Length: 451
Image 1 (tube, rainbow, N blue to C red):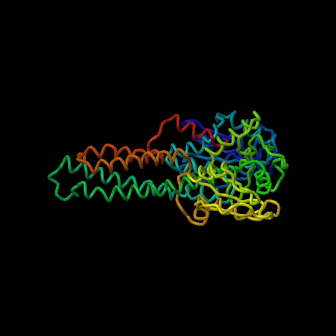
Image 2: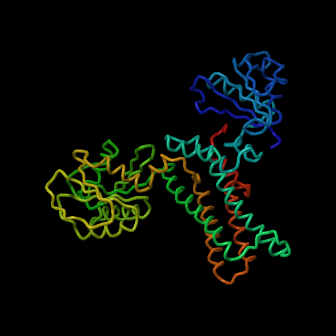
Image 3: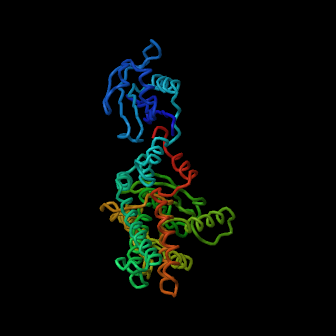
């Protein structure tokens, strides 16, 4: 990181009123002094803005504002210069070319944030939250990202690691220096409540984080049922557009039709599946098979039944199957005479009609309720931001669970310390106390250029 990097930091390149070229590194201020009309810029105070012109020799390229920010009080902890120029394609491109000509290197995607991490300004979890904030499309996604970026989640991880390291330290002292009577004597009895507390906190954050991921990535929902119960009509009503073809002919939907909406700040991704039934039609058989695969992989299933028909054995079988996972039963065609018998199921049952929009709002609310979304959006809770972090937390939880189980047996305390240290290290990987160079490169490659 001894070189100086530069990139365009605005995403409206060539379209907006203003673009920003960001420069970071030991030569950032020297480079701007060589192309800026005010040569005394090299001695400018930190966090000041200067009006002038970018010059290529004697030729004026653009009228600009230049921000000078000296290390260490910058995003990267390096000297940083930001050139605010007019937003046209030509001046922005020319200014960046001039900066690169004067010994700066074009930054890789996410390299400014990567430097902020490697220089110790932010940890790995906070760096990932920066990218989440940039990609946030809803207010709920923004809230989750800013909570993580603010350091609240980091603080919890650090507290858990501190409990573990204190326990490990006491175990080591007991083993190596048994004559130190002032230290806590670690026994199988007094280690148990400490481990249980760590376990409970890990379980809580993992559960809440998995639900929080639904806000970030959306909830995948399969709409299933036999032919002609109104699955495609339900999809169209939910999306408020004619996405799927609706006819009275059984088996019209032969492939999975997808559509998404954002409801109360949460992306809902719907999959309208082919009617599930036994059929001799080869193409329809393929559609039914796809439907069954979709059901296995989605977060939630909505089974559509017809209020105007008696339940079939196949439908009863579907009810039994989906009861084992998150699911909702939507009884459609409530505007027609009732022929459907009362259904015995622990699942939430919603009555409605796609014809007159009845029950649709209740269905959407119930989808969020299945994942406790209202709790997530209404409270200032703590979450792990992505699959990598959740996976490491699960590994740490497995370590702790194993220590708890081994503690019930005649296992020496010092043997338990080995796996407890592994749990401590796994939590450390979440915030970047331990990392591999390849992992870091892959993570920051997902960032936009200039960030």
